Length: 292
Image 1 (cartoon, rainbow, N blue to C red):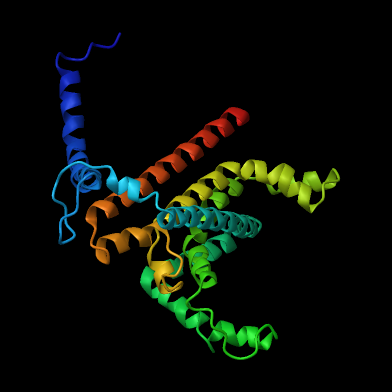
Image 2 (tube, rainbow, N blue to C red):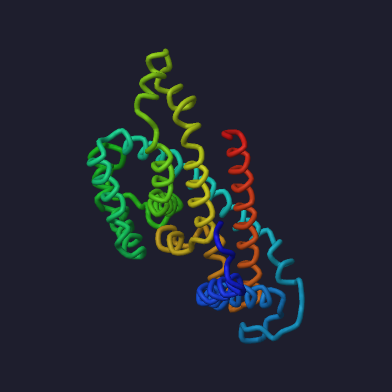
């Protein structure tokens, strides 16, 4: 028989655990919870003459966001986030499938080639796309050589250039979860399906895609939610013509100098992200029940 633990051992263990977690808890409280509470409080405040807040409690900031101009921005943001997530999932699955079909040594090299460009600063990579898509730039030269364009093409600023930047920014976050799901699949599984008469399409839709569903769900989450808050790419590549919610918040804070309304838009963006998390969480639970 083992000896019972000494008296007070549980209390000491709990105190030690609390002491170890205290720095992380204080950091989260100071850098996340307190600013969040301040933003929520400001969203119900009234603006002063200089763009700050002067206290009070009003719902006018949220009512103003129901204006068709702002609803259009929210609708465009949701549509762009859904489209970006869809394209990233399709391309991410193709890239991940190609990676897992290579030899292990080749996989590591290809993964490194995907990761290395993202060691560069985000703004530098975005400005690089301005040079690539500019009139007479490398992409324009390729389209001229292919006969798709004739002479300088004005793609920047534009909605297409903005979307290309979004896909480029979030594609790796879609590749890695899908790659992690497909990496453990035995290659003989696809070969067995082909031997049993499955074509290329049925091998993917009936065999591989069900296995990759957890990775696809994680990839959709990691691309859809961050796209809602992006503001640099639409400004630099899109010229600010079609704003996302992130651009709207920056505009309300800096150009309109209306902090309470900017805070209200930030809270609405947070709610949209939480709802998205809830939807993806529900889908993940249903997937686990089906596979259990």
